[in-house]
Image (tube, rainbow, N blue to C red):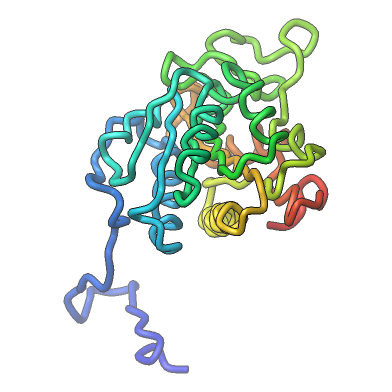
Length: 273
């Protein structure tokens, strides 16, 4: 097959034709691509995927997001979706109330690991156990990024944070909580998966997970959750370029990517997504 048919440009020499824009570079639901998050942060990528899926499903005007407290809260003024700001950790409960009042809307929460697993662990567990028709999206980087990078309940053993300078120690700090696995046996859960934004392949898989989670909600199958591992080079004390590798080697080893519950049935830790 010829390169002309594939429309592939030769990148080994000088361009032979002017580059042209062939599509939108930003989701329509993103009002402004400028943000103040740190270089190398993975959260903007995850939020982009979330907005793309909402638009592709046709719910751009019929979705409500409940936002937790974290670095991602800065996006509340940048996305064109109806939003509710929740108290720290309480987003699943607020989403429950919103969904019961407006069952026709696509309800989601956007939370970090500090917000969901530290501050509001009971909220997400009870919301899942009740089988509430909401989708919780967890941005997990293993640190409280907004407040300086100290340890959270998902921080991996040996991971260095501002409150575990020698690395998280099981005897002193306890073990990390794998929130996705914790929800697997609950009867109200319809879909649970863990993705990542460490590389292009992971980004594609994560977008598919978000779509499945929302489709489960639309079908009225119950609670759904997608955990997304995101980079935080600033909170990890590493160079920006090392973020994706660190994500895979540290957080990814503890919180394995894959689908855990599909159609209300457990499929095993780290199953293909």
